[in-house]
Amino acid sequence: MTQHLTRWARAGAVLAAMIVAASAFAQTTPKNSQGSLLPKDSVDAATFRGGLVFANYCVTCHGMNADGNGRAARLYNPKPANLRMSDKNDAYFGLIVRRGGAAMGRSEFMPSWEAELTNEQITDLVAYLRSINAAKN
Amino acid sequence: MMRAPTSFSHLTWVLPCAALIAVGAAWAAQEHVVAQKNKSFSVKKLTIKAGDSVKFVNEDSFAHNVFSLSAAKSFDLGSFGNGGNKTITFDKPGKVEVECAVHPDMRMDIEVTP
Image (cartoon, chains in turn yellow, red):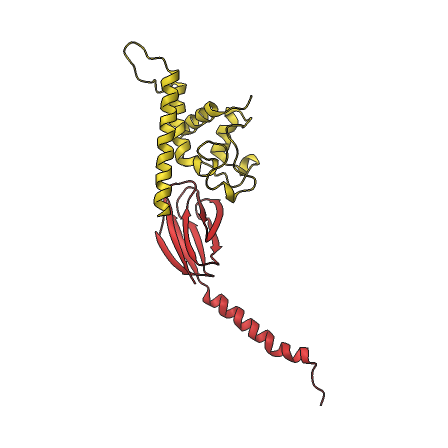
């Protein structure tokens, strides 16, 4: 039963991320007279895709709001990073996602995602993280 | 004839009994092996007894993780690559839902019986 709830929660997270990304896209992307589609290589498209990656792989620890309060956060001390307030740059985000926490001197429980995510997914994820980051860099 | 001190005479039977109990407990507790292959656990449901352990063996070419947030047992064994393994003992009865943090669809249940 809990498994089903978890799956529904994850599906909900994906849907919510899609809605957030879609609404952000709708607000920020000017439409030309022909109503053209979002260019695949645009920042907005990367942010949208990155939100889906985040919702599928990262929410368990970092949480829906990327504030480090995922459902698994209680297992860890220190807690998973609050990605909204992170002062790290994009290169650092990319590295820690690829190599995992231990290789970066951070939590050993942050896995390396290099074998699971494509380069494009990691780039998209970094774009999403940048889009939600509220720290002053 | 002198009698051995009482504490010593107790030791002569207490120690072997304790050893027997320990050996019995160790003999009774089993280690179960669950493989991680093709992004799934080799079994979807496993029933074990309290005190048993489960060894998770990664047979995929990429890293896996094993964690659970269940009330009966919350843990994270971390990530480990091909050929790696981690073992954990389940002390309390209850249902334990096991997941892989790297592959969200990888799940299995462990029913720990008294």
